Length: 379
Image 1 (cartoon, rainbow, N blue to C red):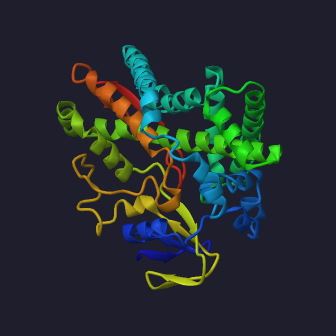
Image 2 (tube, rainbow, N blue to C red):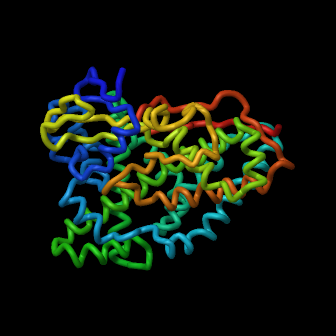
């Protein structure tokens, strides 16, 4: 149908790698921020509490608001920070996989439930200094909240997302109150100190800290969970590549990148035309949305040789972490978690061979991919 397709619901869909890369890297194209959402006639979709809250988080801010929020953070997960976290992530990944292999002694074990869904919330929760007893609640609320970021959420899904957003606000505003009373060396306490210097209004400062904490949890859990589970699924479905990787573990980063290309955690990214313009010769009006179909772009035969083939030696670029000013802040952390899981898994092979038992279960989504179950048995 071409690389720019009119969408039946309005706007356009961009399918090629070339166009998706061009728009993501552009400083002109905008994200659907609060102002854009407020101007839309579909009140149920864009004016819902969860949607309004998303419009205030960093991925949905345009300059200069994005610059004001982003610049003070610096590189949140720089090399020093990641080195401090690595031993803990390695230990947790090894523990979770140990439990997973123990469960396999009795038959089938769900990799998603026992590893993929667990490691991201443990990693981010420990980094933020949250009680481990709260991890299951935050994981569930994150899964529920993401509905508002989908292409066509139903009224019932929006209601679930709104409820989750209210609960997340209650949780993190309570956390901020606690950290104001008893500050530590955790990121939330650091953000409070930082915003108190930039913002004289304490309520406004706390709102900024809340938006940051919410964003970090929402961004880190859903996408990384899918990466970890998809990585295991694809490698178990390609046992020769898994065996080769066990002998050549230095290629683990390549296996992670190919997983991110082949089955990206996010398949659709929204951008708004800043002015009347053209994209691939197609007129796009100011304020019109273009859906960048990243999942399709990653299978564009103009960009990739044999794009439907999963090949961990491919060494090809991908757009799974976005681009431009909205390039994913946590990309290095997600890679580290995947590296720790895969390294621990490979150490247990081939003595404990595995295979996928049946068909994995997927969430019925367009934008945010989620493997809900990955049943595994001993080979």
